[in-house]
Image 1 (cartoon, rainbow, N blue to C red):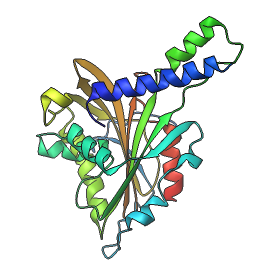
Image 2 (cartoon, rainbow, N blue to C red; image 1 turned 30 degrees about the vertical axis):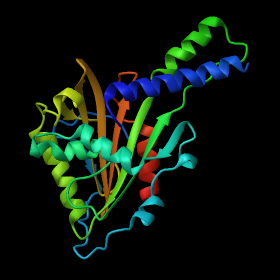
Image 3 (cartoon, one colour; image 1 turned 180 degrees about the vertical axis):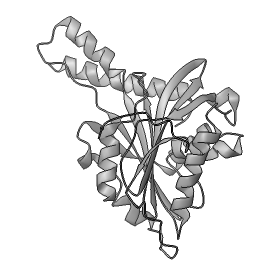
Image 4 (cartoon, rainbow, N blue to C red; image 1 turned 90 degrees about the vertical axis):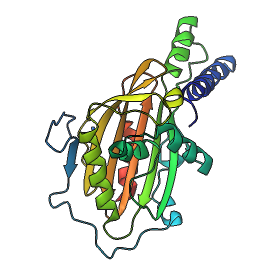
Length: 261
């Protein structure tokens, strides 16, 4: 991920380039649940616990469940490299231990000792203007291209009840860290100023969503994280919208949930 400034610059430049090239060449109901568990959650009627003797999936097995380009026609999907994941973990780290589960989800990982982890990044494609578009329409296309939505989607597999415990840790962190928390390196990462329940997500055996407001280089940025547990697999999705709405990418969440089964 790198510093926020670098990420924004790269994403913005890419979006503008795509639009300029094109020009030159011619959610059941969303609701707020301010429940005692600290997040908007929804689960299957029995929310079955993971089998204590369940064997974790391998990275290769997880990759077959991870969303790909074929699943998201309106996004550019690229597998996150090991260095990008390490960079993201450092960027989102916090000195407040009880909030670390949220920081890990932002980096496409999960709390606890996952036996395997794979992740990908899905970025919305900017819409290209028509060949005969007016100057105003071309300018709007460029402006809209800057409103990219980037989602880090990580799958984590655990032995036994590890996924259930990891999910519980994320929910607990959402409550404990409602007032925000500091970054590990204030000069590089900024801080989280608020964590609040997000839109209800109905998926898997358990699901939770949080709206996370981050202060980056003096600017408050709304983002959202969604965590879904299916058996002993935990899906961690974190969305940054450069349009400023802070909403999770429903297309990515829905596609990932579908692949988990």
